[in-house]
Image (cartoon, rainbow over all chains, first blue to last red):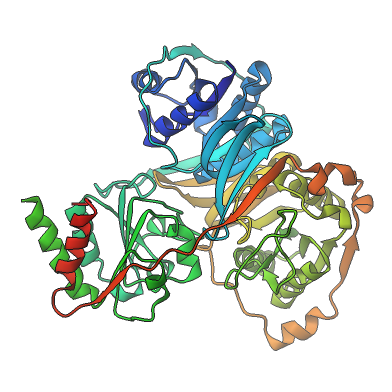
Amino acid sequence: MADVFVLVDHANGAVRKTTAELLTMAARLGNPVAIFVGSGVEQAQPILARFGASRVFAMDNADVAGHLVAPQAELLAALVKKFSPAAVLIPANPAGKEIAARLAVKTDSGLITDAVDVQATGEGIEATQSVFAGSYTITGKVTKGTPIIAVKPNSAAPEEKAGAAQVVPVNLTISEAGKGAKISESKPRVSTGRPELNEAAIIISGGRGTSGNFGPVESFADSLGAAVGASRAAVDAGWYPHTAQIGQTGKQVSPQLYVAAGISGAIQHRAGMQTSKTIVAVNKDPEAPIFELVDFGVVGDLFQVLPQATDAVNAAKG
Amino acid sequence: MNIVVCVKHVPDAQGDRHFESDYTTDRSGDGLLSELDEYAVEEALKLSESAGGEVTVVTIGPDAAADAIKKALQMGADKGVHVCDDAIAGSDSLGTSLILAEAIKKIGTPDLVMTGMASTDGTMGVLPAMLAERLGLPQVTMSAAITVADGSVSARRDGDAASETIVAALPALVSVTDQINEPRYPSFKGIMAAKKKPVETWSLADLGVDPAAVGLAGAYTQVTSVTKRPPRAQGEIVTDEGDGGTKLAAFLAARKFI
């Protein structure tokens, strides 16, 4: 069975959930092989084994960690040329998509980004994408080179499947061209203690209607163990950090439940949340376009509705 | 400092967008300069206003794509290059980046190549990295703020895990996010001045690009099906009469979210 490469998404060895999803997809297509870049492979290995990785190519050196994406693309290109995998699956976050882009050029291969599903068919590997702000679903395939597919988070339910996850260290000298963009400083983000937006099963977002007070949104989110998002209007007003922005120029999410509070539902926002499984909105304006999308909507003041709902959720949990 | 800004003419995202029968994007409706490219044009103008030099905008696309150049010239860019050739239609990101890279080489590699973070139609966000790879330039992408001094560029890149500072020597490729500035509106003076600014139109032959390597036939990917997503059926809407929150919680409980 042909190898299918998965680029591991991790922070110093703490493997993110997307990696388990990608390994699960890779197992549908062939023999999952993990590519681990950075430090902490010992910590990651048991998790990679649990989700079916047969081997783990690991590379840890300062040139990779200290430069933006290009060294990772060089490493992947060298491995693709040596092992000719059936496909390469990469997490569709900004850095992942950039690595995929450079890898496609380096290996003269086709690239599909933001896939929400990947399947083996009689005619090769087919990827599904949601496009034009979620208004169309398209399927496509790579017709030249090695299929390089950037996959969105939450696109597969991780399935455990024992693998050997044998760690194979890789040494590669990064070219001078690959070291052109240095990461001179890195300030870690202070954790909010809430789930990451890309991984969260439930997201509560606030918009213009919060008038800058995200307290009720955050309390409601905490009652449900949810992540907190924001509309572009709220971010542009300086009420919430850009890293929380949901929409075309922020994150595109598809949680099990998305609650939009005080968000009108402009196309820029819909592009980021339209594929959520269940959508709920709270808005004072009954004409707000967000209500066209909802499974359940409350026409009302979020400052009344959300605290009452928070109390009811907390009471139900006991 | 000379800057080349890559821009794209896109269908209006506010309207309904569709596909042609060959699964390429329907570009017959009204189009405009991709909103996210305005931030790159604005940043390039600011840099050239403080450091001098010329801003050239380059685009690829059918005749209507000239409107994207026109808008950038109205904002204040100095000149435009429009790569227009029937063989380009249907190009994927690999084909597009190849053509753009050759156009930039023909312009003469500037101090900075600038782009938006993604187009508002394809939204892949891969073109800046592909261009950096093809041109052999340092990749300084997703910049939320940049400073250029002493022959190098420094940028703030805000990621989920960390906010990073990226530093590279010029020439470099820089992509910018919508956090970097507030793009200007063209002034009346700018609109009048744009009419006299030079725009060159180049074909693939002018760039030495093999037409068979690009376009729909030369694409590295193939769309195999297109399905319009059925409109979401509107669910229950209640008006808060003092019990809206309770009803919301009941809905969540019924759907097993609590």
